[in-house]
Image 1 (tube, rainbow, N blue to C red):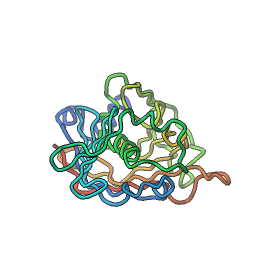
Image 2 (cartoon, helix red, strand yellow):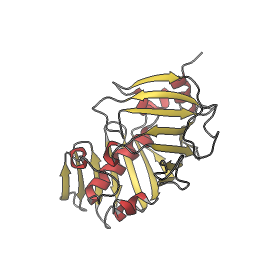
Image 3 (cartoon, helix red, strand yellow):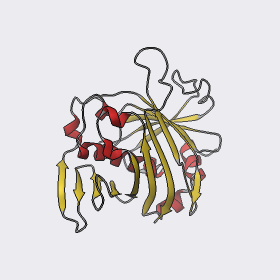
Image 4 (cartoon, one colour):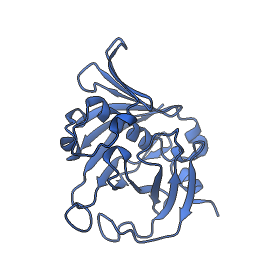
Amino acid sequence: MASLLESVLEASGGRDRWSKVGTVSAVLRIGGPMWSMVRAPDVLGEHDVTVDLGRQRTVFRDYHQAGLRGVYTPERVSLLDENGDTERELLDPRGSFQGAVTDVAWDTLQALYFVGYATWNYLTAPRLLTLPGVQVKELPPERPVLDPQPGLSDGWRRLAVTFPDDITVHNSEQTFYYDEDGLQRRMDYAPVVTGGIPGIHMIDGHQEVAGIVLPTRRRVFIPNPEGPGLLPDPFITMDYSDIRIG
């Protein structure tokens, strides 16, 4: 019987097809109340984005203002003008979040770092899970305590994923959920840069593009600070269209 990871890779296009992918591009629409809380309006709305599968790099066109490119790498985020000259940059962006929570204003470049690494993670999965140093282990079935709809996640198979320090992710220990077809439907994590608030990240709307299957709809829910369960509305929304494989 094939391992869960192999089944997931096959359902999304197969190892061989993923190995030939150089870039994934899309129009990404971002919403949700988080961006008002951290006072980062540049993130809201539509962005044309490209991730590089050969390295941890994400490029947003017309980020912050028309003609500027927002470029994420783990060590540096920057705003480049039309000539490729740097207008602003932030070195060691992860370190700039020390002690940060979601009621503290984020700089434009801090917001770019967050959406840059998150988008890179999302558009490279499940190939992301095959990178050197990533450890995966199938977990037994369980009924999650936190679920946007009670019972929604029941029966989905789970992978415990541990990421090495050289891959930038929300936090090193995460759980990925897959339905009976091997498609990712959920991930649980607690981003370091938001102070470790748990995220219940629901995924659907899968589409095939050039033989690669990617989800187009993501909704992140967080615990209700005033009672049990989750807040009813998503904290972050991400919708993808016009997906292109390079």
